[in-house]
Length: 547
RNA sequence: GGCGGCGUAGCUCAGAGGUAGAGCAAGCGGCUCAUAAUCGCUGUGUCGGUGGUUCGAGUCCACCCGCCGCUACCA
Image 1 (tube, rainbow, N blue to C red):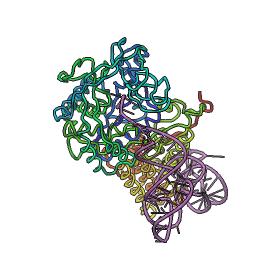
Image 2: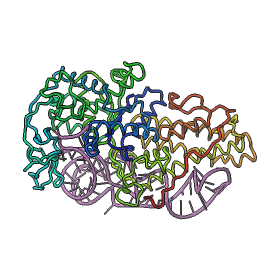
Image 3: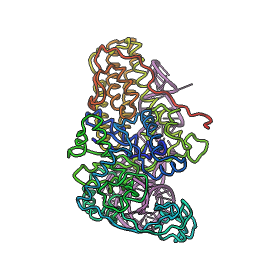
Image 4: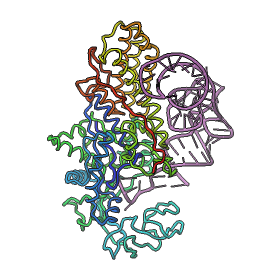
């Protein structure tokens, strides 16, 4: 089970939208499969070569590598604190990534899917370099605005080709750019188009917006696309590239970044001391791969990356690309809200990690854009997570402590209601597991919460605080059953709120980890001394007057 | 402009041809073990609009309105 997660640019940490859109769903999915006993490899890293990094580096007067090296440790801290459990989070700046990129490139070339072509590109004679489209400005041929960029006019929104600009000028120096011929490798997507289309048409279980968009895109016809460009920052060309002036060119970031999933898998294998271990995820036909990305990334993961894989060799194609829509924040518009431009880590000053994860998980943008407010996050945490699940654990542990000295009792004879509750928990677990496999994470979480409600209902019906005065065996049986139910829900909640489930597993005295333990209710043996329980989650209070 | 997604209860969302659903919020009641927690009951809707197909349409078709995204050298 390969869990591939979109590569963030190395120029800043993640906002809640990124977390909810990709990292949290990927982590929930990965944690589920680890518990279920599947071999999971969850990888990502920072994208070192995107334009935003060079922009930031230029602003600070440092090299792009400095930016990447600054942010990568901070990403690691961010994942640790949020409980995002990567097996490897690397960067695209490694020697390994360069080698793997070259392998893919050579595979495409050897199979006849690569071609060198010469095109005219704008060149800044003062800066002595070729200009990316967005470094060219000029008058829009469509609406006449004089500040159009080479790739798009912000005034009228039209997509442009820089050569169509009237009075073009270089954004770097203001010089009038001239067109010069330059030679680049193109990937012949036109030759791969029918294979990609056939493959896409055979996909099952993909989200509507993903498969429809990808198929529509391919049916319009794929254009051959340059995979190199005239830049000094990026993955260099292989020595056998066969282009003129190879030292002035780099591999295009769109082509190289997605290869990171493969290079990260290989890097992970090397670090494990078993350099061939990556093959289990990329060559075994029974291995599955899921790519967690935002909807803006659909073309690169559902169309181009499969084309690159098909054209270069025999590696596994994506099993699914469960792309999410976007999360937006009403708070971002209302300046008083806590949500204004805050990074995910800022939220951890107010929310414990599990609480933030829960609030986001109940609002994942799986099918629609979701507009969140801080109040909605707080409501989810306080009214659902704390009130229903956290309080359930606390009330049962407290009763067990008070009446039974904190020891799991020997149950008496089961009644129907006892059997029914445990059957209900098992059913919710099974349904949740099925939903998790389909990447229906919101609905899966609802199953877990329904389980907690069922236990609360059971307790109200059995009223162990009353029977404690009259019937010790009945009380023991009720608490025994409730504890077994909670043990089952510990697993059910584990992918979503891993910190709390780890605490619970500890309180129950589980001797083996939840991971690999199987997606099932675990029995807690009578006589077990329970750990001292404290409330699992604290209620959240928004600051009255956030800065 | 073209393409795709979405528009269902106050809020967040399920439902995809056969008497409109869940959670939260609201109202009423029960309980008092528990983090003023919990459990039960109740109400709630021109299912974005218009027209059509059908015995029957949130559900299929056409057109329209609104929001979001993509439109190919940022990934």
